[in-house]
Length: 215
Image (cartoon, rainbow, N blue to C red):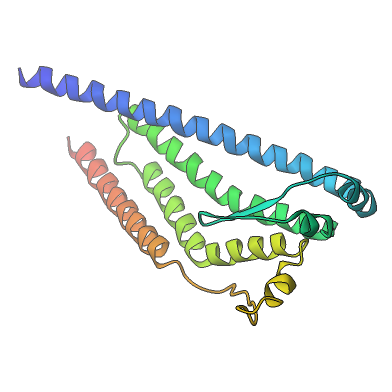
């Protein structure tokens, strides 16, 4: 009876890990597709001249809005018409987003590989420990760079519409500043916890090797 329960639990665990691996595979494919799409947009932005884009924006009827942290700002038609397309700003925006997504993709790939090992019954191993450590390092890097990434993206999105000058013309805003430094303490704590788990897995792999050597 006990053996049967262990077998059922083992099958449920394998089913869970395989299901999660499928989910992370889908996420990985979507992220790769997104990066490929950004690469195409980047090439297009470098080929098409600024005058052509600005001329098209002046003639076309375009609506635009800015989404950030659950906030949506719908821009007026006049603001959109006064928009000035800058090739260098678009290239910077795409490169910044690419770096950010690359770090996230690296984390997704590591999680997917760990789930693949777990589905094969490989749990406490040096390979899993190294993968978990890589995830921890990525999270720690994000904890000290995510504020800079997000602020820079907001800055680049504000530039074409010259929103700073528009806001400053109002009576309730006297100035706008951007803060690119700062630590996301939640991410930093998560990174340290994940790093600790990686060290536990490494110690578990060491004990497993010792057991296998003496068995």
